[in-house]
Length: 444
Image (cartoon, rainbow, N blue to C red; front, side, top):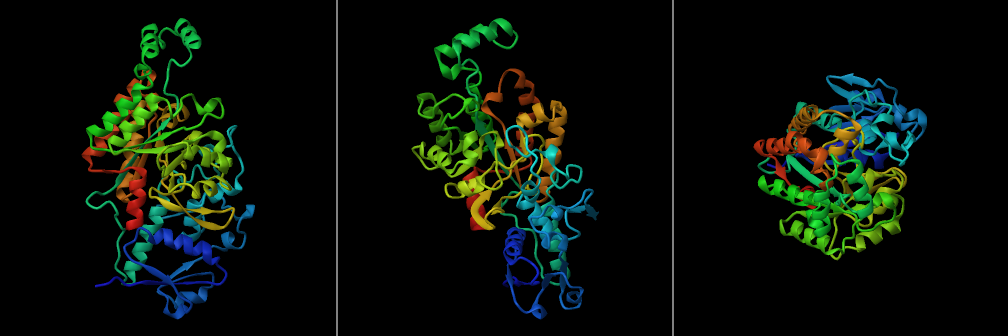
C-alpha cells in the first residue's frame, strides 16, 4: 500500500522558497512524501500566521513573524535564553520551520559578524552557546516532532534510516596538513638541541634517509591500518597547492605522496581536496587546486575550517558534490544543528545549492588544544555524542590528522582514537567515504 502524500499549505506571508527548502530537508529523512497545495481546506499541514487556520487544518504550525517579517535584519535574531518545550529548544517560538532554517542555513553566522583572526566564526562567538542548539542535533528533534504530529492525524510514518542494516554511520576523515616532523634540516637540528625530550637526532636521521620514516608521515600507515582493522573506510583530504606558510609543505606530485594516495585508493578509501586558506574566498584558486589532481575529486574540506557564509559554498557548488568543513574549531558538536547531510542554502544568493554538506562533529585538535580537556573527558564526551547520533540514525563525522599520531598525541591515540573506533565497531556502525554517503542520500 502506497504511503499517503502529506499535503502542505503555506500562508502567503511566508517566503515559499525558504519554506519549501526547509520542508524538503525535514522530510528528506521521513519515509513519506509531501506536496504543496493551494487550497488550505484540503491541507494536512498549514504553516501560517492566522489563528483562523487552527480550525481548518489537521496540523497547524504557527509561524513566528519575528523571523519572517524581519528576515535578514538584526532584530530577526532571537533573544537568549531560547524557549524550551519538552527538551526541544526553539530559536523561534515553537516554529519548527523557521528554527530548522535558522540552523541549516547558518543564519546566525550571516548576521553575527564576529570572527577570529583567521576570519572564522567560533562557537565562543555565538549568542546561543548556552542554549544547546549547537551542542545537540536539534533539527532531528524537530523532525521527530513532525513525525509525531503526522502519526497523530493518521499519516503513519517513521524516521527514514538510509543505512540499511545499520542504525547509524561513520564518516572518518583525515586532513593532510603537516606530514614531516623534520622538514628543515637546520631548524630540526636546532629543535633537537633546544627540545631534546621532543625531538630526536636518531628520528631526524631516519627521516632524512627516507621521508616515509618521518614520525608524522608514519601517521598515514597508522590511520589506514586502524581503519582496516575494523573494516572502516577513511577519507583523506590533501592540500594540492602551497599559497602561504599555513598551507604546509608537501607537493601532491612528490612520489611519496603519489604512492600514499595510491595506497588510499587501493583500500577503497577516498581522496578529497583540503583547500588552501585563501581559496575560501577565491573561486579560481579552488578550481585550480581541484584540477591539480589527475583524477576526479568529489569532496572538499577547507583548511583551518575556513568558511565565508556568503561565498565559499557558492564556489564549492560548481566543483564538488559535497563539503565537510562545517564544524566549530573550538567546540565539538553540531554547527548546523544536525547530524545528517543536507543540501546547502545560499543566504547571499537566496538559492538552494546542489552541494551537500556532511557536517563535522569532532576534531582531534578541538578536544586537545581548544577545549583543553583530558583524554578521559574527551572519550566520554565522544561516547555521549555518538549515542545521541545513533538515536537519530545520523552520521558521526570524526576528524583525526595524520600528523597527530606520534609524540604528545600517543596517549590520545590509546585513550581516545583507538577506543572510540573500537566502540563504534562493537556498536555496529556503517562506515562510508564521503562520496558513498552522498550516493546513499541521493538514492534514498
